[in-house]
Amino acid sequence: MSPDTRTRILAVAREMFHGRSYADVGIQEICAAARVQKGSFYHFFPSKRDLALAVIDDMADDWAHGFVAEAFDQALPPVERLDYMIDAAYYWQKAAADLEGRMPGCLFGNLALEMSTRDDVMRAKLNYIFDKARDRFRATLDEAVAAGALAAMDTEATATAMLAYLEGIILLAKTRADPDLILHLGPAIKTLRIEMSH
Amino acid sequence: MSPDTRTRILAVAREMFHGRSYADVGIQEICAAARVQKGSFYHFFPSKRDLALAVIDDMADDWAHGFVAEAFDQALPPVERLDYMIDAAYYWQKAAADLEGRMPGCLFGNLALEMSTRDDVMRAKLNYIFDKARDRFRATLDEAVAAGALAAMDTEATATAMLAYLEGIILLAKTRADPDLILHLGPAIKTLRIEMSH
DNA sequence: CCAGAACTGGACCGACCGGTCTACTTGTGA
DNA sequence: TCACAAGTAGACCGGTCGGTCCAGTTCTGG
Image (cartoon, rainbow over all chains, first blue to last red; front, side, top):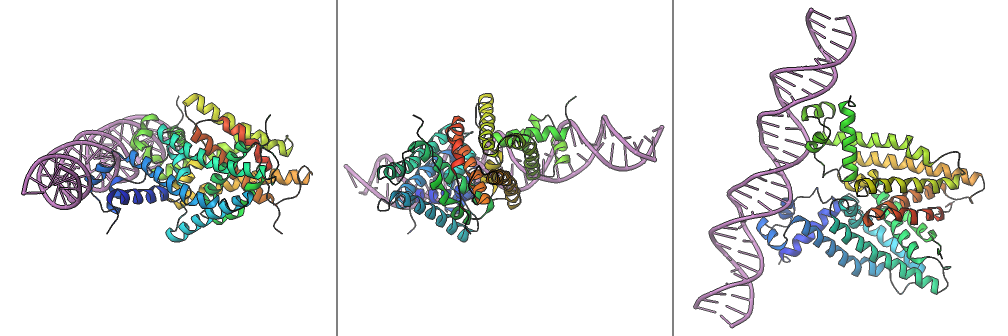
C-alpha cells in the first residue's frame, strides 16, 4: 500500500531538490521516480514552482517538529542546546553522506542561493523560515541571559549571527564534502556575540 | 574596438552566473549578450562546464588581486583588516544591489551549493579557492597573535570559522535582499574563536 | 603572395524542458 | 444505482537545451 500520490511526489521532489538543485531536477524525472504520470502530477501541482513552494513548506514542517524541536530541547540548559543542535546537524549530514555518497547541505540554504534572485516569493518564504530559525536561537539566548549563564547582549542580532554561522559551516562542509567540519567548527558558535547597541 | 571574443564571453558569463545560477543561464543567452555566435563560443570553450571552470578561475584572479588584496591591506593593523574586509564585502554587494536591483551574493558560495553534489571537479576548484581565502584569514590571525593583539588560538580553525561566517552572512543577506545585514553582523566576526586543541 | 591557422557565422541535431489536453478509470455520497 | 468528482494515463505541444558541423573570413608568419 503505497502512500498517496501527492505525498509520494512531494517526498521524491524534496529529496531530489535537496541533493541536487531546483533547476537540475526535471518534472519528468520526478514523475518517473515517484511512479506517477504527468497528468497526475499536474492534477496536484499547478507548476514546478508550486511544487518547490510545497516542498519548502513540507520540509519546514518536518524540521520544526523534528530536528529543531529535538535540537532545541527545552530540558537541556540553554547553552548546551547549541551544542546539541550542532551535533544534530552533523549527524544528519553525516548520515546522508554515508547513505547517498554526497553531502546535500541545507535545503533552505541551497534554494536561497539558487532562487533568491529569480523568484521573490520563494525568497520571501525562505527568509521567513530563516526568521523562525533565528527566533529559536533568540529564545535560547534570552533564556541563557535570564538565567545568568550569559552576559546581556543583543540577542536578536547574535541569534542571526549564529544562524549565519551555521549556514556558513554547512556550506563549507558541503564544498569540502566533509561533514566532520561541522563538528570541528560548530562549537565555536557559542563564541559569537553582538553587544547591545543602546 | 571591443575586447576580444573570449574575454567578452567570460565577462558576460561571469555576470550572469553570479547574478542568477549555472543551470539557469543558457549558452544561447550568453552568446546573445556577448554578441557572439555558437561557433565562436565553442571555438574558445569546449563546453558550458569548461566555461564555468574558466569563469571561476577568472573571478578568483580578480578577487585575489582586487578585493582580497585591498581588504587584507598589509598597512592596516591585523585586527582592523577584518573590519575593512567586511566593509569591502558590504560595499560590493550594496553597489550590485543598487545597480542591478538584486543581491548576487558570493559567486563561489552560490556555485558551491549548486554544483558540489553534481560536479566533483568544480567542487574541488571551489574548495581550493576557499582554502586560499582561509589562508588569508589565517595569516592575518597569525600576525595578530604574534603582535600580541590576540591571545593564542587555533588560527587555522578560527580562520575557517571566519570564512564560514562571512559566507553565512552573505547567504542570509541575499535571502533577505538586504546588504545592510553584512554591516550589521559582520563585525562580530572578530568574536569567533577556536582554542588550540593540543 | 600565399598557405595554414585562428576565428566567425549560422544552420542544424536529438533530447529534454515545463506544461496541456483528452479520454479513461476509480472512488464516493445521495 | 447512478451521477459526478477525483485521480490517472499518456500522447502531444512549442520552445529551448547543450552541442556539432562546416563553409566562409580574417589574421599571421614565411
